[in-house]
Amino acid sequence: MYGQVIKQVRGAILHLLRLASFVQDVVDHLESSRKALTAEELKEAVQHDVVGHKELYDVLSNNPKIRINPDGRYEYKVSE
Image 1 (cartoon, rainbow, N blue to C red):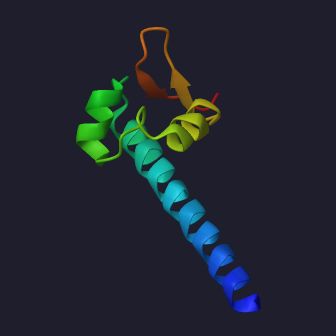
Image 2: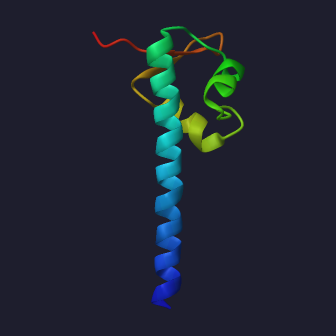
């Protein structure tokens, strides 16, 4: 019983860590490039589908370091 719960918790933690890693890859790339990029350009650069991966899209769209422009391009928000 506890073994299964531990496996489920471990799986959830690994999923969140993987998602956090994807987000960090996108943020780092946008910060270093200083360009507004389309989802396709980001996918090519960081190998993560930011539109097809709903959780990743949701996290990025709510990330204070990322702005999604009206034209759909992602860009790094420079701190003021």
